Length: 374
Image (spheres, one colour):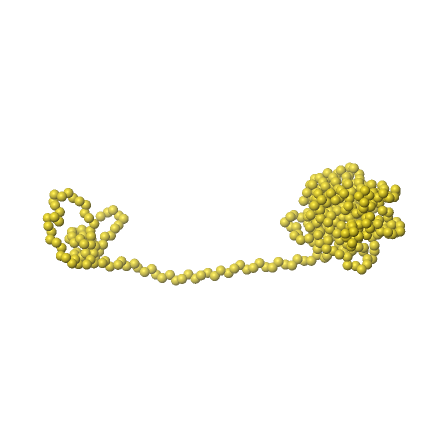
């Protein structure tokens, strides 16, 4: 994701504790847009076709993350105070774009504001389609009777009831976060809502936990004239420094590589150092089993030969039937049996090889070899 952030209606470009300054401290390239000649640059006007077209093309290329406030939806117009700013919108569907009783001198302001809303929505849609995140900031809804803590006037028509904004929220699955700015150091309460895409909303979600704990406030951001004739609600449009720091930190996290992003949303209060990770457990100790002593191999001794039992009957006298005939054809000799008492030389040699002194012994052991030599 690009490290370039587009701030629409950014306010003062050079405010030391402004959002521009905090983003630059986080090494984020900032493109501020505000046509107030005292705060920004008169030529930076979204209603100038060439300037708007250039921003739109850059958003389509995925250059920006857009953050946008708007002033004509302020609840200050609904505070019943003498001399306050006139009501220019009402909550009824046919009067959100412009109240039927809107003073003639304010109608051009309302039309210009509606054009800014349309141009901004187009830029945000283009940026989101290119993969960018965005956030929109505007006063909270003070006309919803289902939120008694915020309710002021049933006619209040905040930015959040504009049909095009509702469609944008639905199409981009935005998250809504509401909080009082007094909890971040502002001298007034000023309940504020931020609608943002899911990734940015995850990083800012803790803002929704903030509550006003003050019995009273030093100032009120309602329709009161300043010494220069402007409404003090315009001065209240500037974010407190702590909010600028939190927004800059979240945007810097979005611009960081995924592997280095925080896994939890940053706390809205003073940052705390994370607890150190416990040391890894030591590796398991494996005890080597001692090798049992090896006994010397025992020599294998051949079993003594078993002597054949002497015959119970004396051998029969040789007869002609038992003697081989000289005329008989030669037949292969049978294997020597323990019962054979032949006194041949070969058998005697076998006895001598086995250390048998008595050639008449019955026990004969044959030794087989792999060699074919005699």
